[in-house]
Amino acid sequence: MSGTIRVLGSPPRSAPVLTGETILASLLQAGVAFPHNCQAGNCGACKCELVEGDTLELPYSEYALSPEERAQNLILACRTQAWGDCVVRLLDAEELVLHPSRVLRCRLIAFDDLTHDIKGLRLSIEAGGPYSFSAGQHAKLKFAPGISERDYSMANRPDEAELEFHIRHVPRGEASDYVFTCLHLGAEITVSGPLGNAYLRDNHRGPILAVAGGSGLAPIKSIVETALGADPQRQVHLYFGVRDERDVYLESHLASLRERHPNLTVQIVLSEPSRPRARREGWLTDAVSSDFASFEGFKAYVAGPPIMVETMQRALRGKGMAVRDVHADAFYGQADDAFNAR
Ligand SMILES: Cc1cc2nc3c(=O)[nH]c(=O)nc-3n(C[C@H](O)[C@H](O)[C@H](O)COP(=O)(O)OP(=O)(O)OC[C@H]3O[C@@H](n4cnc5c(N)ncnc54)[C@H](O)[C@@H]3O)c2cc1C
Ligand code: FES
Image 1 (cartoon, protein in one colour):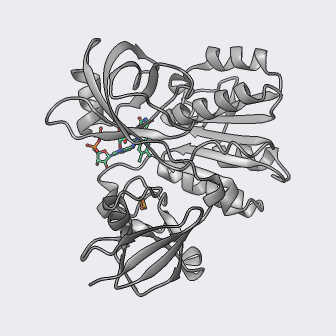
Image 2 (cartoon, rainbow, N blue to C red):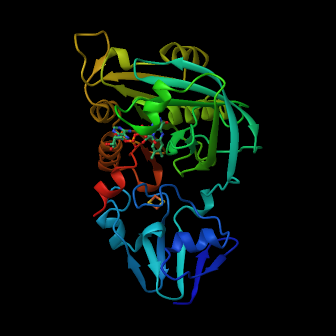
């Protein structure tokens, strides 16, 4: 198999087709930067338009690429092999931000209990920098030899020197179990990134809807603080959904942010309160849907458990939001790769 993959854009880029490899792998191996994350057909980060070319598609999740999107000639570059010359176009090329990929040696300098099952990690960068990323992106963290690396979202603003992560304990989860049982202050952690395309769009100036489920607050915190740092008057509506009172975290941090920015609204919503609370109750999607008649001029950023992210995306589309205005990061696990494949 021979041929060339061309990526339309400015500047146009190209790479030879590698036999048995996907379009994404061929591009990356030729050193052509292209948005990606899971490389397993789960996240949608490598979604692009197939302009021309014969291709073979490997299984992927419908969350990453819906049948409607496929009917519009969209493909996942990480699940598509080219049979010869082919041309693809990035969906939001004008918004594409590509930071240099880094492998950082970091040191754990603060380790806090944010809730009963979420730890807050603060890392100093000792080698491998400088590290630049866009608010909302994530990185792969490797905690120790023999422990698989996993994706975690940066919770700090990109202009802060130290990295912050929020890690929820998944029972019997390889990496998060290690974090909760073995990780200690002073430990060395390898951070590779940045990755992901659910990042804050700098050229959008309108209102922001920011929706977080559980530890999805990490990237949403980074997005909200970065947006307010760039424009303190920005209308930002933050929705934070958790199961019960004990799962709420960073509430005083959010309150002090609100004091400084009256244009920020914060709604904390409990889905399964164990007893009546002086809080909003129900599903995040219902709360958002009932609070807004229209999302004209908005962009939405959504992060957290896959089921919440998918339901929220559907609800926002139902309210007339365009796909290009909803930037979502579903925290699926490694095991979901096979589970989700169609
Ligand atoms: C783009 C992205 C960003 C992410 N950012 C964060 C973050 O900021 N904070 C954070 O806490 N997590 C985040 N995650 C999830 C994280 O990468 C891991 O999947 C999670 O920590 C579990 O890893 P593990 O090794 O402990 O569990 P594994 O050993 O991978 O899995 C053990 C079992 O738990 C299930 N499982 C895996 N992940 C989850 C989950 N999230 N919820 C419920 N069940 C699960 C698996 O299906 C499996 O059955 C993110 C994921 C993605 C894709
Ligand atoms: S990188 Fe292709 S779907 Fe995630």
